Length: 378
Image (cartoon, rainbow, N blue to C red; front, side):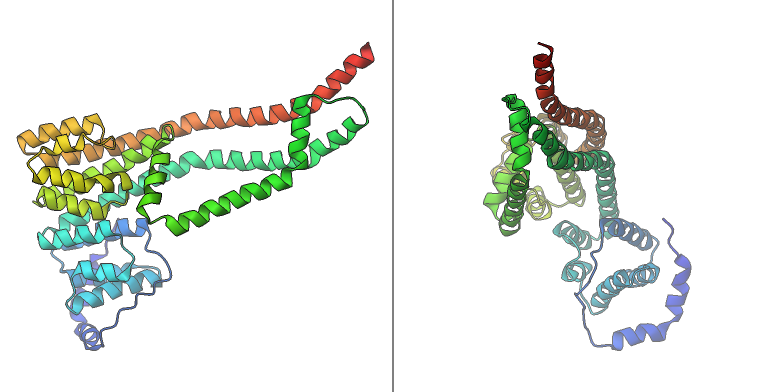
């Protein structure tokens, strides 16, 4: 990712422009039409880190980044942050007021500013979003084919139940004989298919309504996280994703010499994952009372045995930050591998399910014809 450092001399020379910015009344525009995406954040943190490590001060670095933004909404966001910095606010406060950054980001930035280790924090945030984008791309790649196949299957199913089955049903009425039970059930589904679709739509609408109304309540989050974690394979994959984030955050905090208790306080604010959030307070109280961090983690199923045993070893040699960094990379690799496995497993599974559905419908339509042929032969 190339940074145009050549623009730096122009900024130094353009004193009048800089003075005019300072002379303007302080006003922050918090109305940004478009979200600052993860991809843009990954680039933003990487380039800002490179500039600061090169000796460029924060204000000039923000000017350079703003000049490189192609979209006006992104340029406005960077200029708003820079205006707040010029008026004496910290980078953390400026970012937080834009409402474009998550608690994980501005708490990390705050830590970097307090420990004078901002460049390292920015690099870690770049790596965090890089891994997040990679995982998302893998999931999209894996899910594209199944979603396409399922969409085609639903279209074919609707066509068969709304057009093909009624046509066969009209022919069967002329037979005057009792139809096989399987055929009767398929015809019943076909006759009431519109009602079934309405019911499915209502259930989906109710689910969305409940989600938007209660998604921030602890009770809802507890129930939904419990349901999701019980889903075979996917539940464990989701838990692994958040364990990777948990380990990366602790590595970041502990390497900045933040006390473990304070780190746990920040983790609770930084990670939006109920199974971890709900047990942080208990773990923190255990640590305060002199208990081992590893023993405290072992009391919860969220943390696997491998993580617990590694943490216990790291505590003995006082290398928790190093161990959490290794665990973060290990879990990230595990997520990458499992994402690829999903693609290998889910494609033949979907094809099998589709074949069964279409096969059952076709067999149910031909069964009466087989019975009729037997009667005619006799």
